Length: 455
Ligand code: GLC
Image 1 (cartoon, protein in one colour):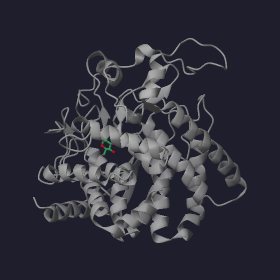
Image 2 (spheres, helix red, strand yellow):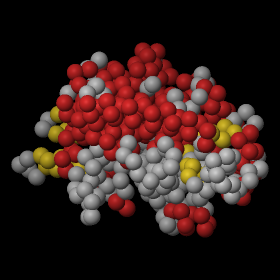
Image 3 (tube, protein in one colour):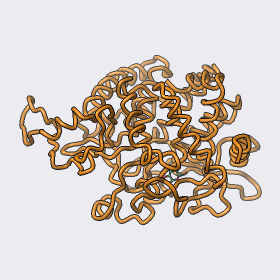
Protein backbone atom coordinates (compact mmCIF):
# COMPACT_ATOMS: atom_id res chain seq x y z
CA UNK A 1 0.00 0.00 0.00
CA UNK A 2 1.29 3.48 -0.87
CA UNK A 3 1.99 5.86 2.00
CA UNK A 4 -0.83 8.18 0.90
CA UNK A 5 -3.24 5.28 0.95
CA UNK A 6 -1.93 4.21 4.39
CA UNK A 7 -2.43 7.71 5.82
CA UNK A 8 -5.93 7.83 4.42
CA UNK A 9 -6.76 4.47 5.97
CA UNK A 10 -5.39 5.57 9.39
CA UNK A 11 -7.37 8.81 9.29
CA UNK A 12 -10.52 6.94 8.39
CA UNK A 13 -10.06 4.58 11.30
CA UNK A 14 -9.56 7.49 13.69
CA UNK A 15 -12.70 9.26 12.48
CA UNK A 16 -14.70 6.06 12.65
CA UNK A 17 -13.61 5.55 16.28
CA UNK A 18 -15.01 8.86 17.57
CA UNK A 19 -17.47 8.45 20.44
CA UNK A 20 -20.13 11.11 20.90
CA UNK A 21 -22.27 12.16 23.82
CA UNK A 22 -25.31 14.37 23.19
CA UNK A 23 -24.00 15.01 19.72
CA UNK A 24 -20.54 16.17 20.85
CA UNK A 25 -17.33 14.19 20.26
CA UNK A 26 -15.81 13.20 23.61
CA UNK A 27 -13.32 10.41 22.91
CA UNK A 28 -12.26 7.53 20.67
CA UNK A 29 -12.87 3.78 20.97
CA UNK A 30 -9.80 1.60 21.60
CA UNK A 31 -10.60 -0.57 18.59
CA UNK A 32 -13.14 -0.65 15.76
CA UNK A 33 -12.90 -4.39 15.29
CA UNK A 34 -16.36 -5.88 14.57
CA UNK A 35 -15.35 -8.87 16.72
CA UNK A 36 -13.01 -7.52 19.42
CA UNK A 37 -11.27 -10.00 21.73
CA UNK A 38 -12.83 -8.31 24.80
CA UNK A 39 -16.01 -6.27 25.13
CA UNK A 40 -14.31 -3.23 26.64
CA UNK A 41 -12.23 -2.51 23.52
CA UNK A 42 -15.25 -0.49 22.33
CA UNK A 43 -14.72 1.90 25.23
CA UNK A 44 -12.58 5.02 25.29
CA UNK A 45 -9.46 4.25 27.32
CA UNK A 46 -7.72 7.28 28.79
CA UNK A 47 -4.24 6.06 27.81
CA UNK A 48 -5.35 5.03 24.32
CA UNK A 49 -6.88 8.45 23.75
CA UNK A 50 -3.48 10.16 24.22
CA UNK A 51 -2.17 9.54 20.68
CA UNK A 52 -5.67 10.28 19.30
CA UNK A 53 -5.59 13.60 21.12
CA UNK A 54 -2.14 14.43 19.77
CA UNK A 55 -3.36 13.82 16.21
CA UNK A 56 -6.44 15.98 16.84
CA UNK A 57 -4.28 18.77 18.25
CA UNK A 58 -1.91 18.57 15.29
CA UNK A 59 -4.91 18.74 12.95
CA UNK A 60 -6.42 21.76 14.74
CA UNK A 61 -9.37 19.72 16.07
CA UNK A 62 -8.97 20.72 19.71
CA UNK A 63 -12.68 20.68 20.76
CA UNK A 64 -12.72 16.90 21.19
CA UNK A 65 -9.68 17.08 23.47
CA UNK A 66 -11.34 19.72 25.63
CA UNK A 67 -14.55 17.66 25.80
CA UNK A 68 -12.55 14.59 26.74
CA UNK A 69 -10.74 16.42 29.54
CA UNK A 70 -14.04 17.61 31.02
CA UNK A 71 -15.73 14.24 30.59
CA UNK A 72 -13.01 12.39 32.48
CA UNK A 73 -12.93 15.00 35.21
CA UNK A 74 -16.69 14.75 35.77
CA UNK A 75 -16.65 10.95 35.86
CA UNK A 76 -14.93 11.11 39.24
CA UNK A 77 -18.38 11.43 40.76
CA UNK A 78 -18.95 7.78 39.77
CA UNK A 79 -16.12 6.50 41.95
CA UNK A 80 -17.33 3.46 43.83
CA UNK A 81 -16.49 2.92 47.44
CA UNK A 82 -14.20 -0.13 47.61
CA UNK A 83 -15.05 -2.81 50.11
CA UNK A 84 -13.32 -1.62 53.25
CA UNK A 85 -12.11 1.79 52.14
CA UNK A 86 -13.17 4.89 50.33
CA UNK A 87 -11.66 5.59 46.91
CA UNK A 88 -9.77 8.90 46.71
CA UNK A 89 -11.25 11.46 44.32
CA UNK A 90 -7.90 11.95 42.62
CA UNK A 91 -8.13 8.61 40.80
CA UNK A 92 -9.26 8.85 37.17
CA UNK A 93 -10.95 6.07 35.21
CA UNK A 94 -9.22 3.55 32.96
CA UNK A 95 -12.01 3.91 30.41
CA UNK A 96 -15.59 4.99 29.81
CA UNK A 97 -18.43 4.23 27.42
CA UNK A 98 -21.68 5.89 26.40
CA UNK A 99 -24.76 3.82 27.10
CA UNK A 100 -27.85 4.60 25.08
CA UNK A 101 -31.10 3.01 26.23
CA UNK A 102 -33.08 4.50 23.36
CA UNK A 103 -34.32 7.44 25.43
CA UNK A 104 -31.26 8.93 27.07
CA UNK A 105 -27.51 8.69 27.00
CA UNK A 106 -25.33 8.03 29.99
CA UNK A 107 -21.57 7.90 30.38
CA UNK A 108 -20.37 4.96 32.45
CA UNK A 109 -16.82 4.87 33.81
CA UNK A 110 -14.56 1.98 34.72
CA UNK A 111 -12.14 2.72 37.56
CA UNK A 112 -10.83 -0.81 37.41
CA UNK A 113 -14.00 -2.05 39.09
CA UNK A 114 -15.07 -3.81 35.87
CA UNK A 115 -11.64 -4.46 34.35
CA UNK A 116 -10.11 -7.92 34.05
CA UNK A 117 -8.22 -8.52 37.29
CA UNK A 118 -9.76 -5.35 38.84
CA UNK A 119 -6.60 -3.35 38.17
CA UNK A 120 -6.29 0.27 39.32
CA UNK A 121 -5.43 2.65 36.44
CA UNK A 122 -2.66 4.62 38.13
CA UNK A 123 -1.47 6.11 34.83
CA UNK A 124 -4.85 7.67 33.86
CA UNK A 125 -4.68 10.82 35.97
CA UNK A 126 -1.07 11.37 34.92
CA UNK A 127 -1.96 11.11 31.22
CA UNK A 128 -4.91 13.43 31.87
CA UNK A 129 -2.55 16.08 33.27
CA UNK A 130 -0.26 15.58 30.28
CA UNK A 131 -3.16 16.18 27.88
CA UNK A 132 -4.37 19.18 29.84
CA UNK A 133 -1.02 20.87 29.37
CA UNK A 134 -0.79 19.78 25.71
CA UNK A 135 -4.24 21.26 25.04
CA UNK A 136 -3.36 24.52 26.81
CA UNK A 137 -0.04 24.84 25.00
CA UNK A 138 -1.45 24.25 21.54
CA UNK A 139 -4.63 26.35 21.90
CA UNK A 140 -3.46 28.98 24.39
CA UNK A 141 -6.70 28.36 26.34
CA UNK A 142 -5.34 29.32 29.77
CA UNK A 143 -8.88 30.15 30.99
CA UNK A 144 -9.73 26.44 30.75
CA UNK A 145 -6.84 25.49 33.00
CA UNK A 146 -7.88 28.11 35.53
CA UNK A 147 -11.49 26.92 35.82
CA UNK A 148 -12.33 25.98 39.41
CA UNK A 149 -13.23 22.39 38.55
CA UNK A 150 -10.00 21.87 36.59
CA UNK A 151 -7.86 23.37 39.36
CA UNK A 152 -9.68 21.22 41.91
CA UNK A 153 -9.03 18.11 39.81
CA UNK A 154 -5.30 18.90 39.76
CA UNK A 155 -5.30 19.36 43.54
CA UNK A 156 -7.23 16.14 44.21
CA UNK A 157 -4.87 14.19 41.99
CA UNK A 158 -1.81 15.65 43.68
CA UNK A 159 -3.36 14.90 47.08
CA UNK A 160 -3.55 11.25 46.11
CA UNK A 161 -0.28 10.96 44.20
CA UNK A 162 1.78 12.75 46.87
CA UNK A 163 0.25 10.97 49.82
CA UNK A 164 2.76 9.39 52.15
CA UNK A 165 2.65 5.61 52.13
CA UNK A 166 5.33 3.06 52.98
CA UNK A 167 7.93 3.90 50.34
CA UNK A 168 11.49 4.53 51.38
CA UNK A 169 12.33 6.07 47.99
CA UNK A 170 10.91 9.08 46.10
CA UNK A 171 9.64 6.78 43.36
CA UNK A 172 5.97 5.88 43.29
CA UNK A 173 4.86 2.51 44.65
CA UNK A 174 2.07 0.80 42.67
CA UNK A 175 0.44 -2.63 42.33
CA UNK A 176 1.03 -4.95 39.39
CA UNK A 177 -0.80 -4.10 36.14
CA UNK A 178 -1.58 -0.47 36.95
CA UNK A 179 -0.56 1.05 33.59
CA UNK A 180 -0.29 0.04 29.91
CA UNK A 181 0.71 -3.43 31.08
CA UNK A 182 -2.63 -4.06 32.71
CA UNK A 183 -2.17 -7.75 33.48
CA UNK A 184 0.06 -9.39 36.02
CA UNK A 185 3.62 -9.27 34.70
CA UNK A 186 5.86 -8.87 37.77
CA UNK A 187 5.69 -5.08 37.36
CA UNK A 188 4.48 -4.22 40.87
CA UNK A 189 6.66 -1.95 42.96
CA UNK A 190 8.29 0.97 41.19
CA UNK A 191 7.93 0.36 37.43
CA UNK A 192 9.80 2.77 35.18
CA UNK A 193 6.79 3.80 33.07
CA UNK A 194 4.98 5.05 36.17
CA UNK A 195 8.10 6.95 37.31
CA UNK A 196 8.45 8.68 33.92
CA UNK A 197 4.79 9.68 34.00
CA UNK A 198 5.04 10.76 37.62
CA UNK A 199 7.99 12.96 36.74
CA UNK A 200 5.97 14.59 33.96
CA UNK A 201 2.95 15.05 36.19
CA UNK A 202 4.90 16.76 38.95
CA UNK A 203 6.51 19.08 36.41
CA UNK A 204 3.12 19.91 34.88
CA UNK A 205 1.50 20.56 38.25
CA UNK A 206 4.16 23.20 38.89
CA UNK A 207 3.18 24.86 35.61
CA UNK A 208 -0.59 24.63 35.79
CA UNK A 209 -1.64 24.87 39.42
CA UNK A 210 -2.48 28.42 40.42
CA UNK A 211 -1.18 29.72 43.76
CA UNK A 212 -3.48 29.52 46.77
CA UNK A 213 -3.45 28.18 50.31
CA UNK A 214 -4.04 24.49 49.52
CA UNK A 215 -2.16 24.69 46.24
CA UNK A 216 1.00 26.18 47.72
CA UNK A 217 1.46 23.27 50.09
CA UNK A 218 1.00 20.79 47.22
CA UNK A 219 3.29 22.75 44.94
CA UNK A 220 6.07 22.73 47.53
CA UNK A 221 5.68 18.97 48.00
CA UNK A 222 5.62 18.38 44.25
CA UNK A 223 8.76 20.46 43.71
CA UNK A 224 10.81 18.61 46.30
CA UNK A 225 9.55 15.18 45.18
CA UNK A 226 10.38 16.07 41.59
CA UNK A 227 14.00 16.80 42.42
CA UNK A 228 14.58 13.72 44.50
CA UNK A 229 12.75 11.52 41.98
CA UNK A 230 15.03 12.76 39.18
CA UNK A 231 18.20 12.12 41.20
CA UNK A 232 16.99 8.72 42.33
CA UNK A 233 16.03 7.48 38.86
CA UNK A 234 19.27 8.74 37.32
CA UNK A 235 21.28 7.03 40.01
CA UNK A 236 19.49 3.74 40.56
CA UNK A 237 17.66 2.99 37.29
CA UNK A 238 20.42 3.88 34.86
CA UNK A 239 22.36 0.86 33.60
CA UNK A 240 25.43 0.97 31.41
CA UNK A 241 28.61 -1.10 31.29
CA UNK A 242 30.23 0.70 34.22
CA UNK A 243 27.21 0.45 36.40
CA UNK A 244 26.67 -3.19 35.46
CA UNK A 245 30.24 -3.87 36.43
CA UNK A 246 29.72 -2.15 39.78
CA UNK A 247 26.66 -4.30 40.48
CA UNK A 248 28.51 -7.41 39.31
CA UNK A 249 31.19 -6.76 41.97
CA UNK A 250 28.80 -5.60 44.71
CA UNK A 251 29.26 -6.67 48.30
CA UNK A 252 25.94 -7.50 49.89
CA UNK A 253 24.54 -7.37 53.42
CA UNK A 254 26.10 -4.02 54.23
CA UNK A 255 24.52 -2.34 57.23
CA UNK A 256 24.31 1.35 58.01
CA UNK A 257 24.36 4.68 56.27
CA UNK A 258 27.74 4.19 54.56
CA UNK A 259 26.55 1.19 52.51
CA UNK A 260 27.40 1.26 48.79
CA UNK A 261 24.93 -1.41 47.74
CA UNK A 262 22.14 0.54 49.38
CA UNK A 263 19.28 -1.66 48.16
CA UNK A 264 21.16 -4.88 48.87
CA UNK A 265 20.97 -6.24 45.35
CA UNK A 266 22.75 -9.59 45.04
CA UNK A 267 25.00 -9.83 41.97
CA UNK A 268 23.55 -13.31 41.45
CA UNK A 269 20.34 -11.64 40.22
CA UNK A 270 22.03 -10.29 37.09
CA UNK A 271 20.44 -12.32 34.28
CA UNK A 272 22.57 -14.47 32.00
CA UNK A 273 21.84 -12.44 28.86
CA UNK A 274 23.42 -9.38 30.49
CA UNK A 275 26.42 -11.37 31.72
CA UNK A 276 26.78 -12.64 28.15
CA UNK A 277 27.44 -9.11 26.92
CA UNK A 278 24.05 -7.95 25.71
CA UNK A 279 24.84 -4.38 26.75
CA UNK A 280 27.28 -2.75 24.28
CA UNK A 281 29.95 -0.38 25.62
CA UNK A 282 28.37 2.73 24.08
CA UNK A 283 24.81 1.92 25.15
CA UNK A 284 22.63 2.00 28.25
CA UNK A 285 19.02 2.12 29.40
CA UNK A 286 16.82 2.68 32.41
CA UNK A 287 15.95 -0.65 34.05
CA UNK A 288 12.35 -1.74 34.51
CA UNK A 289 12.00 -1.61 38.29
CA UNK A 290 14.06 -0.96 41.40
CA UNK A 291 13.19 -1.87 44.98
CA UNK A 292 14.64 -3.45 48.11
CA UNK A 293 16.91 -6.32 47.03
CA UNK A 294 15.56 -6.00 43.52
CA UNK A 295 16.55 -4.73 40.12
CA UNK A 296 14.30 -5.83 37.27
CA UNK A 297 16.80 -5.73 34.43
CA UNK A 298 14.21 -6.10 31.67
CA UNK A 299 14.13 -3.33 29.06
CA UNK A 300 10.71 -1.64 28.89
CA UNK A 301 10.42 0.54 25.81
CA UNK A 302 7.69 2.99 26.80
CA UNK A 303 9.26 4.02 30.12
CA UNK A 304 12.57 4.68 28.35
CA UNK A 305 10.96 6.66 25.51
CA UNK A 306 8.96 8.78 27.95
CA UNK A 307 12.04 9.41 30.08
CA UNK A 308 13.71 10.85 26.96
CA UNK A 309 10.67 12.91 25.97
CA UNK A 310 10.04 14.32 29.45
CA UNK A 311 13.71 15.10 30.15
CA UNK A 312 14.07 12.54 32.92
CA UNK A 313 16.94 10.93 31.00
CA UNK A 314 19.95 13.18 30.37
CA UNK A 315 21.17 13.96 26.82
CA UNK A 316 23.98 11.42 27.20
CA UNK A 317 21.56 8.79 28.44
CA UNK A 318 19.15 9.48 25.58
CA UNK A 319 22.01 9.01 23.11
CA UNK A 320 23.02 5.75 24.81
CA UNK A 321 19.43 4.41 24.67
CA UNK A 322 19.38 5.11 20.94
CA UNK A 323 22.71 3.28 20.58
CA UNK A 324 21.08 0.30 22.25
CA UNK A 325 18.38 0.37 19.59
CA UNK A 326 20.99 0.54 16.84
CA UNK A 327 22.83 -2.50 18.19
CA UNK A 328 19.72 -4.58 18.89
CA UNK A 329 17.48 -3.47 16.04
CA UNK A 330 16.41 -7.01 15.12
CA UNK A 331 14.97 -7.72 18.54
CA UNK A 332 14.00 -4.27 19.92
CA UNK A 333 12.41 -3.00 16.70
CA UNK A 334 12.23 -6.07 14.49
CA UNK A 335 9.75 -6.56 11.70
CA UNK A 336 7.14 -4.44 13.44
CA UNK A 337 8.12 -1.59 15.73
CA UNK A 338 8.48 -1.98 18.63
CA UNK A 339 9.21 -4.52 21.36
CA UNK A 340 7.27 -3.61 24.52
CA UNK A 341 9.55 -5.49 26.89
CA UNK A 342 12.78 -7.46 26.43
CA UNK A 343 13.38 -10.30 27.05
CA UNK A 344 10.23 -12.39 27.52
CA UNK A 345 9.58 -14.26 30.75
CA UNK A 346 9.56 -18.03 30.16
CA UNK A 347 9.26 -21.26 32.13
CA UNK A 348 9.13 -20.97 35.90
CA UNK A 349 9.56 -17.19 35.74
CA UNK A 350 6.53 -16.91 33.45
CA UNK A 351 4.49 -19.16 35.76
CA UNK A 352 5.43 -17.26 38.90
CA UNK A 353 5.40 -13.69 37.63
CA UNK A 354 2.41 -13.75 35.27
CA UNK A 355 0.41 -16.36 37.18
CA UNK A 356 0.58 -18.61 34.06
CA UNK A 357 -1.23 -16.03 31.92
CA UNK A 358 -1.74 -17.66 28.49
CA UNK A 359 -2.24 -14.31 26.74
CA UNK A 360 1.17 -13.26 28.04
CA UNK A 361 2.94 -16.38 26.76
CA UNK A 362 6.64 -15.81 25.98
CA UNK A 363 7.16 -13.32 23.10
CA UNK A 364 3.48 -12.48 22.96
CA UNK A 365 1.36 -9.48 23.99
CA UNK A 366 2.90 -7.63 26.97
CA UNK A 367 5.47 -10.35 27.50
CA UNK A 368 7.83 -9.53 24.65
CA UNK A 369 5.27 -8.77 21.93
CA UNK A 370 5.73 -5.87 19.48
CA UNK A 371 3.30 -2.94 19.70
CA UNK A 372 2.80 -0.50 16.83
CA UNK A 373 1.56 2.15 19.30
CA UNK A 374 5.15 2.52 20.50
CA UNK A 375 6.06 4.01 17.14
CA UNK A 376 5.02 7.52 18.11
CA UNK A 377 7.07 7.70 21.29
CA UNK A 378 10.05 6.06 19.56
CA UNK A 379 9.98 8.39 16.55
CA UNK A 380 9.65 11.42 18.81
CA UNK A 381 12.40 10.21 21.18
CA UNK A 382 14.77 9.37 18.32
CA UNK A 383 14.23 12.80 16.75
CA UNK A 384 14.76 14.48 20.10
CA UNK A 385 18.05 12.60 20.43
CA UNK A 386 19.02 13.78 16.94
CA UNK A 387 18.72 10.29 15.44
CA UNK A 388 16.23 10.98 12.65
CA UNK A 389 17.59 8.07 10.62
CA UNK A 390 16.38 5.63 13.29
CA UNK A 391 12.95 7.27 13.31
CA UNK A 392 12.70 6.90 9.52
CA UNK A 393 13.87 3.30 9.63
CA UNK A 394 11.22 2.36 12.20
CA UNK A 395 8.53 4.22 10.29
CA UNK A 396 9.49 2.38 7.08
CA UNK A 397 9.24 -0.98 8.83
CA UNK A 398 5.77 -0.10 10.12
CA UNK A 399 4.57 1.31 6.80
CA UNK A 400 5.56 -1.89 5.01
CA UNK A 401 2.96 -4.01 6.82
CA UNK A 402 0.84 -2.23 9.38
CA UNK A 403 -1.88 -0.70 7.14
CA UNK A 404 -2.06 -3.79 4.90
CA UNK A 405 -2.40 -6.04 7.96
CA UNK A 406 -5.44 -4.03 9.11
CA UNK A 407 -3.85 -2.07 12.02
CA UNK A 408 -3.33 -4.96 14.48
CA UNK A 409 -2.94 -4.21 18.16
CA UNK A 410 0.27 -6.23 18.58
CA UNK A 411 2.62 -8.75 16.93
CA UNK A 412 4.24 -11.91 18.30
CA UNK A 413 7.64 -13.56 18.11
CA UNK A 414 11.20 -12.56 18.93
CA UNK A 415 11.34 -10.30 15.86
CA UNK A 416 7.63 -9.42 15.87
CA UNK A 417 6.97 -11.18 12.58
CA UNK A 418 3.49 -12.61 13.30
CA UNK A 419 0.22 -10.83 13.94
CA UNK A 420 -0.56 -11.31 17.64
CA UNK A 421 -2.43 -14.50 18.38
CA UNK A 422 -5.27 -12.72 20.17
CA UNK A 423 -4.74 -9.30 18.64
CA UNK A 424 -7.59 -7.03 17.63
CA UNK A 425 -7.61 -5.51 14.18
CA UNK A 426 -8.44 -1.83 13.57
CA UNK A 427 -6.77 -0.92 16.86
CA UNK A 428 -6.99 2.85 16.96
CA UNK A 429 -3.70 3.65 18.71
CA UNK A 430 -1.81 1.58 16.13
CA UNK A 431 -3.18 3.97 13.50
CA UNK A 432 -2.76 7.19 15.51
CA UNK A 433 0.85 6.32 16.37
CA UNK A 434 1.45 5.90 12.64
CA UNK A 435 -0.17 9.27 11.94
CA UNK A 436 1.89 11.08 14.58
CA UNK A 437 5.08 9.57 13.12
CA UNK A 438 4.01 10.74 9.67
CA UNK A 439 3.31 14.29 10.92
CA UNK A 440 6.65 14.49 12.72
CA UNK A 441 8.73 13.11 9.90
CA UNK A 442 7.09 14.93 7.05
CA UNK A 443 5.70 18.26 8.30
CA UNK A 444 7.91 20.94 9.91
CA UNK A 445 4.81 22.79 11.20
CA UNK A 446 3.67 19.66 13.06
CA UNK A 447 7.13 19.32 14.59
CA UNK A 448 6.80 22.84 15.96
CA UNK A 449 3.38 22.10 17.47
CA UNK A 450 4.57 18.77 18.83
CA UNK A 451 7.40 20.48 20.69
CA UNK A 452 4.74 22.42 22.58
CA UNK A 453 2.95 19.19 23.43
CA UNK A 454 6.08 17.49 24.73
CA UNK A 455 8.46 19.14 27.18
C1 GLC B 1 -5.07 -3.69 26.66
C2 GLC B 1 -3.75 -2.98 26.92
C3 GLC B 1 -4.00 -1.62 27.50
C4 GLC B 1 -4.94 -0.83 26.60
C5 GLC B 1 -6.22 -1.60 26.33
C6 GLC B 1 -7.07 -0.94 25.29
O1 GLC B 1 -5.73 -3.96 27.86
O2 GLC B 1 -2.94 -3.71 27.77
O3 GLC B 1 -2.78 -0.94 27.68
O4 GLC B 1 -5.21 0.41 27.18
O5 GLC B 1 -5.91 -2.88 25.86
O6 GLC B 1 -6.40 -0.84 24.07
